[in-house]
Image (tube, helix red, strand yellow):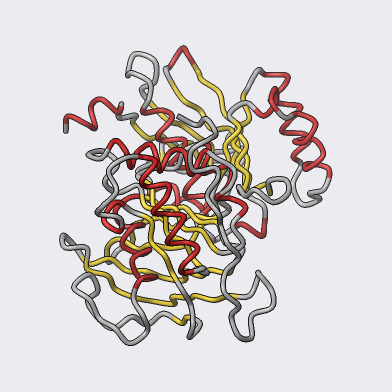
Length: 353
């Protein structure tokens, strides 16, 4: 699926010059707050931005709906948008969408190859939106999409890339530094811009040296103590890094965890998020990873997700995910920690409910 050849010879021309834009880091597209009608519901889109150096994966239907705002100009309204687009965008911004509907005369991978190449050379876009949509019914487009994202040439493009995909794959996590993904609040679904994680599930084995080096650079947390404790007790450390194809990953968080087999518990010993990543949604994504990992196990292996909360101010945050307080108040022996639990719901049961 990811072999080279077809689609690797596509000419990805440099984008047309944009007046006043001399740096690839300068923003060329911004959305502060917008409402988008997907046909089934209205979702909010907040705080999205792109520069020529952006590499973004837009996740799921709601992420795709947010990406559709790129295709509308600042004065247009559309059936897909409940109001005029409030995005800030460079006046001469060119956006090209790569999807089967854009190339109705193409039926084979080689025809898509030629059509995409022609569109890029003709338009010289600043932003390319590559959509996975339609690949489940169109085998030729699935080949095209897979070869593009798994190849090397697309990632050398000097403009912004927005990849609309059903889910994040390892390839997308490795190349994309940010994601447009939906989260829920009290008023409904909100699509925001978040770091795109690259997950190392056993960092004590796969990247101990890098883990120790990062820990030494963080003075406000005794990470070396936690690492040594995990090594001594046979716990696991799962590492989350911001993705991106330029330079090494940036540490976004660590989860120290282990299974308590006697009680069938997925126990979280400690969650660390760097100060600069806090209040950005990073911790929430890490907690959802914990819940998802537990859901992959049957109830015979994992009945509960448990943790010790050492900061009472975080109790409402954990409760948001469904955890409940098992301690009934602090005692002299608990060290100021609150034991919290969440019943595991295996993925098979979720699918049937």
